[in-house]
Length: 273
Length: 366
Image 1: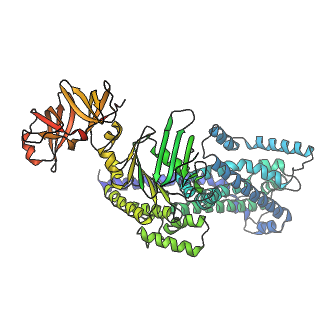
Image 2: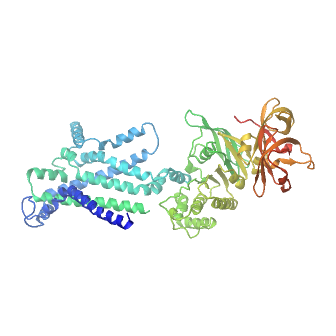
Image 3: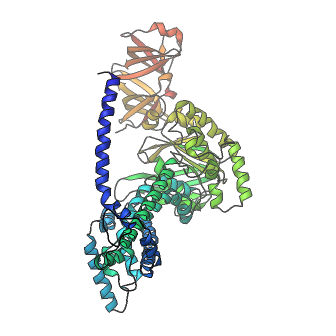
């Protein structure tokens, strides 16, 4: 078959490929994206398709103390988790560089929260903090307990991304820095850190996203003092089904997209170097 | 434990190195490095040369023994405190810093004032011929230039001792020759002591004031390139540096510095008794260029043995002849005298001669 004929045959085949891929993506994304038009409905109910368009539900959101408090809680817990998980995860990744007996077991242990079902962790933490409050340490229904729990489940992300970054940092670079007179802290801040910065950032972004969106553990550890956004939405779904929920959902989608976009930009920036 | 400073910059005293309970990688190392010299550690992989260099740098601990620098014990001090410049095999340039920043690194780490740093960096860049490349990143310059950056970085903070771990291995031949010349020039200009590790014996011969030949964790011999080449003290050294013929034999008698060795039925030769005891086996070492084709007119040599010519190879500037010495030992002979080239043919019996001083009776390798 001639090249021209083969190319046009491939081009024809391409169309079907794109069509199939497009349908698959639509199938996966549609349930999520449906909240966007729902949030702009003029009706009081979540009916699809919307009878009219209105931005009232977004307005209600920003006026409601309830919702803004929830958003602030999520933000507080999210940032707190990000800081803790980033620092601890980076240290763990650095520690797992050297060879020592039991290293692989320790690595598996650090990554294990990824394997444990959320509900199991939620019950475990609830029990743990309940026991603590019996001893007088009241941490239930506080940001701290949530930050602790979220940090545990997000450390694996940071360990994985920083470990990947560290693979690019040759051990001889650190030896060279040492031979040139650098102290361990100078070696870390001037040589290692700049080279793993993007790994830490990517891990931090996914940590934030995970904590911001997390529902199960938050449900168990929340109370009247701390109610994160997902928990508030959960209550909303059960007690007051309004398009306000769709508005919050849309905002959460936007936050996720922003985080993913930032992560992609960081990756592109790093690859260019 | 005291050392003998005198002229030695670095001293290794009874140094041993082993990992865990396994075989030692460095055994009973005693060595003095002279101030300002270019000393090369030469040996095959696994011989202990790199481990010894790393012990001097501080990246490997010393299992037992001492290392002195300027009379002070250093084997327990961390690498960052030893003030030694080091050039690594893969250069280890910091990829996220520019050339100028790489070179400035040791000065910034010592918190020198910025103006002084800029001045020193500019000057060292001129001396290694890198001026103008300061803003580039390591990935944007050639291998030879990267090598110079590594050198500049190791020299900018004016250390008295510079260590180099096979720095030219990654370069092609032409660049390697060029960089050998550059490194020697910098050695003279900066007046530092250099300890250089390589497995390439021609590189060692070209660059060194003295060579330390390593084998299996021990030092076989220390000497100038000429001493190593012309007066090898062990079979390993004779074999590792330059071309060498090995002829097994039994020592018949010794007489001061010489000995008589029986190499085959009715063939005895005289050699330098380096490792010869009457009645014991020995391995003779004689280089191809020191063996001559004897003709009725040629002057008398100490040794004279018959050989059957097996193969002749023409190489333009020399003729190489493989022959069976006394019917038993295979040897290679370099014939430089053109007049003789037409005189030999495969299958012929010839007379080969050499002087006693060029032939050493050495240890028998296992």
